[in-house]
Image 1 (tube, rainbow, N blue to C red):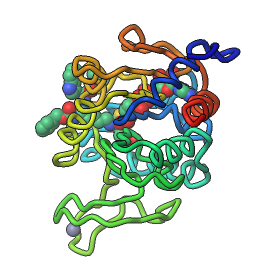
Image 2: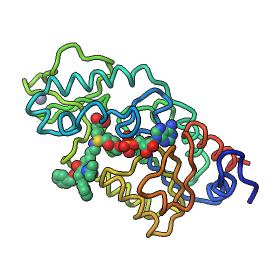
Image 3: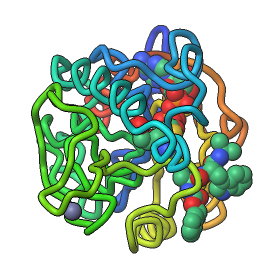
Image 4: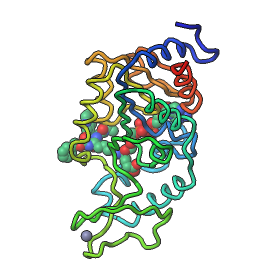
Amino acid sequence: MGDSAPGVPGLDLAGDWVTRAASVAVLTGAGISAESGVPTFRGAGGLWRRFRPEDLATPEAFARDPRLVWEWYNWRRERMAEARPNAAHFALVNLEARIARFTLITQNVDGLHERAGSAKILKLHGDIWRLRCTSCGADWPDRRATLPKLPPHCACGGVVRPDVVWFGEPLPAGMIEEARHAVTNAELLLVIGTSALVEPAAGLIPLAKRSGAKVIEINTEDTPFSGLADFALRGPAGEVLPQLVERASR
Ligand code: BJW
Ligand code: ZN
């Protein structure tokens, strides 16, 4: 155990835990992409400050006004297309290479973990770069920053939606079970940049704790699970996470 790093108390001890862990699960949220320029949902500058989720991120909203919902997704796709993975995304790629059993679970739809080079990712809330037909169920990748004609239509004539998970919708088949399996078997759970307010993703944190994992939270602010975490490292993920992984590499 070394001294705490200046500015981030607990970093050295947390680094020791990462070094010793043979199995690590990571849960990420919008905060990990904030330093890449992708807006978060809640908090200062969050998307929900300007838009009501029930107006935009529900199947009812899409059925009511697919064009309005698509305008919002088009705007977000433009922002995400310009974004680049940041030091936190890359730190997770390094960590994956060194941990025998490693599972990256993300609530993000922005694709920045893949672009950084993470290999195995459980995308709990889908992928903004995939489209799905509401009629025939076909789905396919579409990486254009802006879709020209809104809402897009499928060859079958059906209205096409982003392949993401809205409120009230189930997560992709088998995904939460796989995530629960990973956190139940992990010695360490890193929780990075999520407000931990949305279920069932948030439930992974107390589940890991009950199953005996150490929990390290990295966030600029407190969350409902900060008290449950063994370490709550306060600061931007793009600064804190590379330092943590660097300590674990010594
Ligand atoms: C930084 C930082 C920096 C900033 N560094 N940190 C149990 C109880 C009550 C309600 C429910 C329940 N179970 C289910 C529900 C309902 C609902 C729910 O959870 N509601 C709550 C709001 C109460 N859940 C659902 O409906 C889910 N479905 C479901 O449960 O289905 C059951 C079912 C089964 C069978 C049939 C039918 C149904 C689905 C939830 C889907 C969530 N979808 C969204 C949109 C995705 C698509 C899109 O992107 O457009 O997912 S909502 C939005 O929230 C998005 C996110 O993935 C998700 C979580 O947000 P996240 O990532 O935590 O971001 P923020 O903005 O909240 O937080 C950012 C954090 O970063 C903050 O803490 C900052 O401090 C921090 N930060 N900068 C580090 N630089
Ligand atoms: Zn179709």
